[in-house]
Each structure stands twice: as structure tokens, then as C-alpha cells.
Image 1 (spheres, rainbow, N blue to C red):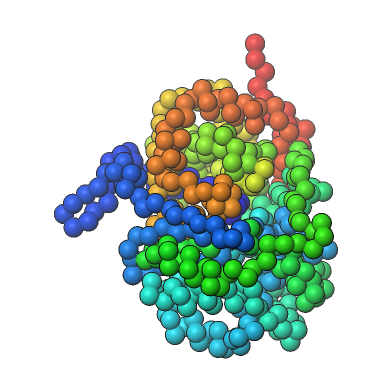
Image 2 (tube, rainbow, N blue to C red):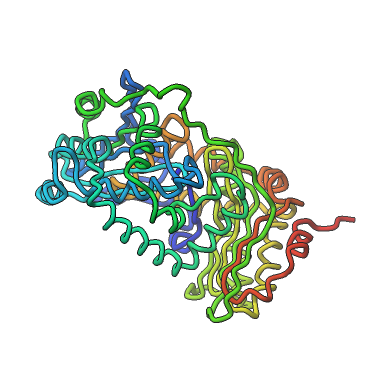
Length: 475
């Protein structure tokens, strides 16, 4: 996550009319939305001598989530080793130098804990949810999984089969396919165009040495954050970090410090026509802002104005999103969602939709029309609704220790600190219609988009027609 895929307006717009009326019930008492923001626990941050950062938020729960967030992912891979991070994620739980696979599994299960991991384009995470009293054991096991994995040759072959099966499963998920193709064409010729899982050819040929080199290149102390949320004491967590991670190296061999190459955006398209499929999956995007850009919050609000829609939604002409109302009244699509994927120095601002073959052209027209409205005619009411929906979405995404821990880990890697909800709220509240129009004109108006399409997409307009709809003639 590094890469952030904001999906705003889903399942929250109809439930939260005004976030300042949102209350958290505690017995007979209630806390307003504003009070809950100001009363949010502080995130403590400590840096060890080797550069590894320790961050935590204490909420006095009986459970906690603790994990390691690492600045590595498919963006840091070459064509030769693309997929190494994902393969390594699979190998990490297959035994360590102290524990066999079965012993590791028994240790986790005896705690009643849940151990998991994920890999994205810029980040890798290994985390465990457990009882707060078992925090020391959880940190010990995580240190083994990440820095003492056995990487057994005997386990690699079975895991190849598992990875290849996952690749097949992803190919059947047309949303994932469409968005991977969007990255491949938008960032063609750069590492951000790589998929997280990598090609099947690499999954068949990666060696143990490839994985060892990947660890030695990326799993360095300054690139790692030990994050925790829930029933955790920060001083105790720092002590545990010193005990288990002080020996993690911060040095590189020679000039081997990995630096991600700049990712150039290319306006282009890619189509995979398959008339056997019942529905077309289409995505259109322009280059967005990086995670730390001051433009990111206005773009989040703009994204919220577009919103999302599913054919199962009720409301029809009363839906708050203008594009959602048009989709419902004109029967344009089965679903759509606006998205904002933010990386360290760039991003994608787009709309993904699923429709039948006869409505592709109309849906594309109205989607681009919605973008042009953002650049020219966005209103106070549009912005007010979008800000409420976005605030509610941000609060809703942090319900539980695991999403909070993930938020901490990604924020420390992206920004060097945890941005509190009160600050997000203030930055969102400061957005005006003029800011939306200016920022969207900067990123959307008269820009060359990237387009990807999968399925019966014969009716998708020619790229030149799509490009010509990225501006309105003015008189």
C-alpha cells in the first residue's frame, strides 16, 4: 500500500449524512465525531541506532496487531526477478532456522494468533494479530520469519506450484487483470509497470539465490518499520525491537543501495478482446499525485465526487454521485468506481467500470464528462457531500487494530510520520470548489490518458476519440 486505492462513497454515503453527527456509543455516553478525532491515541515513534523505526498506538485493548512494514515490492524488481518479493512472502512461513514449518504453525496456533503477509508495488508487510499479553512472542516469531527464514530448497518446488496456481486465479479476476494492464501500459518501460506476482516464467525459474539477494538488497534496517496497535506499551515494544532487530544490517555492499528509477507515465492503451466473456472491464486513468504531494487531498475529494455505483444500489435518481445517477437512469453499467492509487512519486487517478458490450461507448462518454465537470463546473454541494463521504470512509477504514497497524506502517514509510485523523480532517475541510477545479485542470484537463480493456470491447472508442474527450471547446 504504499500504494493507496481509495474507494470512497461505498456503503457510507447513505449511512452518514454529516460526519459531525457521527457518534460512538459507549454505554449511555456518546462522543461526537470532532471529539473522537481530538481524542485519538497518539502514535509514538522511536528510531533505533541502526535506523529501524518503531511506531505504535496504544488503545488499551486485550488484543493487538504487530508487524514489519518494509520498503520493498515489485517496483524494486527488474524484469529478471519480478515476482521475487511475492515468492519470498510464500517462503517466509515455511520454516525458520529455529522452527520447522510445523513448529512455527503450532507456535502461532497455540497463541490463538493469526499470522499473515502481503506484497504490493512498493511495500511488503508481515504481521500478526494476537492477545496483547503475547506481544513478546509475536515480535520474536516475526523477527525469525523475516530475518531467519530457512528458504529451504526442498520447499521451493512445492511453492512454485502454489504461486503458479495463484497466478491462474488472478487471471480469472478480471478487475485485477484490467488494473494490472492499466499499470503496464501507463508505466510501460518502467518498474512500476510490473505486476506484483510477476510473470509465470519467473515463478518457474527463480532460485534460492535470487531470494537471498533480494533480502540482502532490501531488508535493511532503515527500510523497515516495526508497527503495533492495540494493547501495546511503546517502551516495551522498543525494548523488544532492540532485542530482536538491533543486529539487522544497515550497510550495503559497495554501491548496491537500491534506488527506484523514475516512473514515466505514458498516455496509451491496451486491449484484450474476448467476445466469449459476458461483460467488458474497462479502466481509464491519468497520472495522479505522489503520496506526499500537497495535491493528494484535493484529488481524494475529487475522487469522492465521482464516487462509485453498483447495479444493486437503491436510490436511482436520488443517488448523491452525479455519475451514479446517470449510470442508474441510463442503465450505463453494472458497476463503476473511481480510484486514486498513490505511490511515492506518482500515481493513477482513474475510473474502472464493468458493463455490457453495447454500453461501453456511452459509459466512457459519461465517465469523461464527469471528469470535465470536475475541471469546470464542480459546485459547493458536490464538494460538501464528497468531503463528508471521504471523512466517513477514512474513519471507517480504521476500525480494528489490524487496519490501524497497517496505516501506521505505511504512513511511516511514505511520510516519515503517522498523519493523525484530525490532520486529515482539517486538510479535507480546507478543500474548496476552486481548489478542485484547479487541481483537476492540472491533472486531468487536456491530458493523455491510459486505457485498459478486457472482454467484448469492440465498441470501445478509438484512442484518438478518447483523447479528444479530455477537453471541452470553450467560446
